[in-house]
Image (cartoon, rainbow, N blue to C red):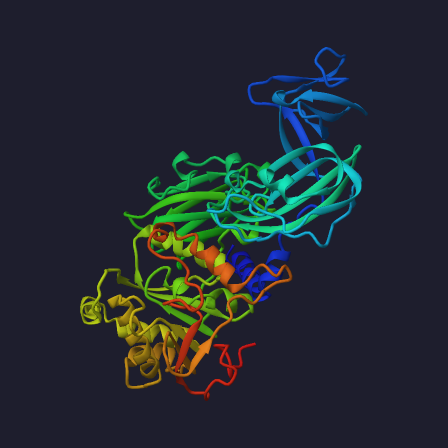
Length: 569
């Protein structure tokens, strides 16, 4: 068990090092084309299919519950369907529409001049819009729109648009109503537009779409498994204490079980059993993450999770088959012992708000990067932080000093309240243990004046020198040795200024940028949305501007790369 989990974690780390493009490439590919299907509507046991678009015509067949037919056109009141090798008509109100990957022959007639005005819409926007018309080689009678969700591997939305008269040009105005965002969940999507010309279908348009908002649940097989009902939702308030048993039927073909702790134990044991009740493996997990995971062998039919301690609780369990969306399911690794770049952040979200695209940029480029939080907020803040960090591209579990999170506008007051925890020593020990080449941290002025921000920056600046001093904290010197950080950058520092480009595309779509990933990550911080937002360039807390406060490798020349003069590849 231990070796299997280690191998999986190494594979996951490797995927990150290959960058955003490779991470996206490992997912199930989006089908090239789709079929629109219809089945009896809710409350309807069946739907009659007629030979002509009127109820008085001959009935060809009855579409029964659980069956589907392919929709190939629309008359405005009836859908034209393929029924038993002939065409038939079924009333709109008698059926519901869905979609599946296309199975028949379908050509491509993609207009390369057509594009979305913005492939990264926010929830406040009402519609997606095309920048120009879509031109087809034949006169179309029906247009189909499909939104493929990259977390569920399913079409989230199917729209069918009957045209008043055949046309070879689809204008943005004709599609606007069908591209309403209000009925879609947030997340990464692919929009596909198809057309039908007298039954001949063709792909007209495809584009990635990224919508900020609540995401769909990642594809999983939890519903097929037996487990306590209070672990099926995602609420932190519904918990199970003590040992938890998860029964997994062979049909689920499960490979992964994830667990989210409300109160995290110091350790837990995972026991896996086969169908005969024989113990397959027993593994003690001594490094416990709030969001943890267990790899499952093909013959696993039962998993028993037993935490150590009396006051711990588990809040959510999910079980996944091999086709689960890797980018959407958190399988955290332990932090690398040797980091290229460390972001020192006071609170859970400061690393996004004030350090900008640093995490997303360097994680996508393959640097060994991590985030260190000096303070630890309430449990919901930690959930939001993990969701955000994973979205931004981090795969090594964040480092948390665990100092209390309290509002203060005075650095002296903040430092005084932290004093009993010996925060300077904790920070230096982290520098020595994880050995970052470069550190990036917040503003000496605490951005908007937060005392704990100021205290974090002061401790970081002092800690760079102390980490290299063999006389400071001999105990951690014995454990980890001393460490010389090569460079320290401070947000908004006015000397040796560097300006980072967070709008540089990270993949071939030209859409995914460090700023995009940072915004997507901050969207997970729901409790903070009313108070803060990602700052744009040239604003008060411009998260692209930093100053080189300390260097052991000489001054920057390009002044746009934190790892300049660092041999990190």
